[in-house]
Length: 174
Ligand SMILES: CC(C)(COP(=O)(O)OP(=O)(O)OC[C@H]1O[C@@H](n2cnc3c(N)ncnc32)[C@H](O)[C@@H]1OP(=O)(O)O)[C@@H](O)C(=O)NCCC(=O)NCCS
Image (cartoon, rainbow, N blue to C red; front, side, top):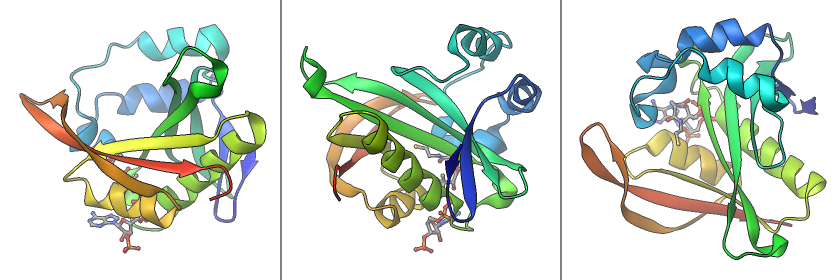
């Protein structure tokens, strides 16, 4: 468990599959900025069966409050800017349940996961990108100590249109 003040991040369990399968195609839960088309019902089971969503290359964590109630989920994957281990970074993303947004959980979750990567892996950089219109996520990243680096023009195809993304990063020690 990655322990925070108001929330904790914990690995997926088999019991979580039901909740996350239920919200997999729920636009309210995922939000318009995570609307990449329908998700099949075996994707989660298959991912869980491989390494419980807790691989070094990619994974997901459950965001819970101190009572253990599910607040949302965080995902991560490695990205590489060269062939050597030193050029690897982690990229993170998240969804907070619609009824739990605006309470500071998104800020805390992203700060917690970045801290975990810096403690656990020898990486210099954790990054996140979000739609240029996703103001809540941009605010959350800035409050979590991430720095806005620039705009990736028309980087994402979603819902019939190419979207500009904003790239943020947090470096070890920041
Ligand atoms: C983006 C998201 C993760 C932010 O998490 P959150 O827990 O709601 O955000 P926090 O409470 O930590 O607040 C972060 C900032 O966003 C602001 N914010 C939250 N919801 C907002 C909204 N609907 N409109 C405008 N600002 C909003 C907060 O007020 C806060 O800024 P402030 O301190 O200046 O007021 C969450 O809204 C969410 O899950 N959205 C849907 C999925 C998504 O877009 N994920 C990111 C995709 S890359």
